[in-house]
Length: 166
Image 1 (cartoon, helix red, strand yellow):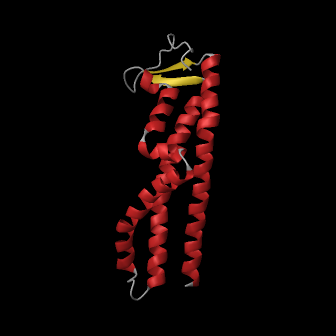
Image 2 (cartoon, rainbow, N blue to C red):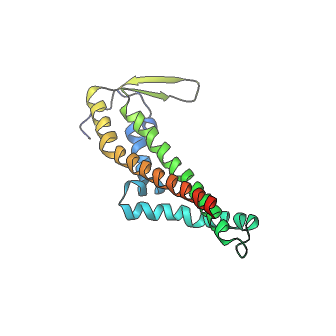
Image 3 (cartoon, rainbow, N blue to C red):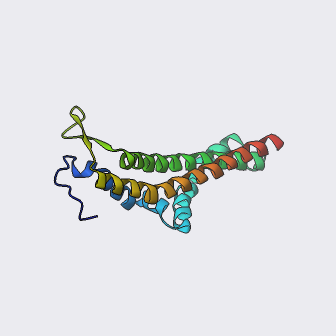
């Protein structure tokens, strides 16, 4: 990776797709989505468990747990699953954005502000490297996040079905 020539690259370092990938990979929540399954589940738990603190009182105000425990649990569980879905959506969109920038042959960038957008065509060796990183570094994460969306969607549907039965 160090033998590639970046001297002709006019893109500021922080806007180069490979550097955006590195920054995303090193950030706390995004890093865990690339880690082992236990690290990933633990990171999701850090969103899911505190969400109960916010969602449970709202559910309790609507459905008193002493009188309507099933409705309380199902509404709180659906709310918490929705909050977790927002966190997973943030992860997915962040990874997808960087993956798309790595995959494109042309890099769009700004030299000093939003008003002076420029483009730079990647040389073949950099494009190949970026596409390999996208395929092997990001695609597995996007698949994991898609599966998580599926599980969350099923849990929300199960909560709705449980609500209708209860």
